Amino acid sequence: MNKTLLPLAVVLAAILSLVFFLTIKGDKPMNEATTENTQVLIETTMGNITIELDMQNAPNTGANFLAYVDDGYFVDTIFHRVIPNFMVQGGGITTDMSDKPSSRPPIENEANNGLKNDRGTLAMARTGDPHSATSQFFINHADNAFLNFTSESMQGWGYAVFGKVTDGMDIVDAIAQVQTGDSGGHQNVPLETITITAVSRL
Image (cartoon, rainbow, N blue to C red; front, side, top):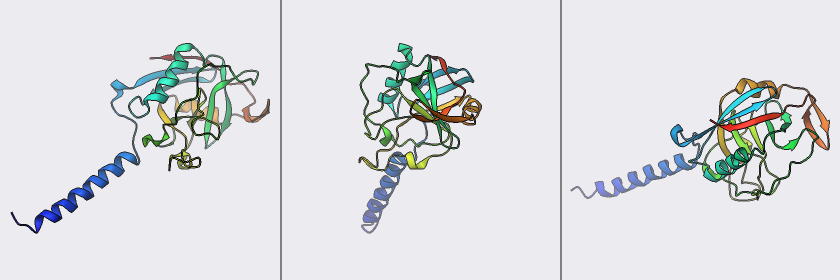
């Protein structure tokens, strides 16, 4: 064996391993193994939205969302925050602009799973505490790279993507275009209430 080739082979192997690692931890697409993912139908007063949860890359967030689905929690909540070319948010405020009670605890942030806040993806809303997400979620109406994970710090955690819209993005676009105002201490609230009437597994 040519001894001069061994170090070169080792170097090349190390480079390939690094590239593979960065690919896995970087811009990761949604899990394509749809048989392992769960489809959910969100029915609203403006139309239906079908989403696919990425149970491989965001298992805890997906399981948390499904627990709220199975409890019927999302019924009669509204899309209470709508900003075009940014996102539409719902899943925790009722038609009278009150917080809907829940006994479920906040979940650990899974934004370090490599999934990106691209248009049409589903992510968890939270407070300034990275690990405070409960029921509220948002659908990205644009590519929002500034919401992505950069580091495990207060400023860097970002917002955990756990699914994507597979049908009904036209409904999301329609929601994003409604007139909004202030209501119940909230900003960017649709002037015409957009209610979630049912959420179910498919």
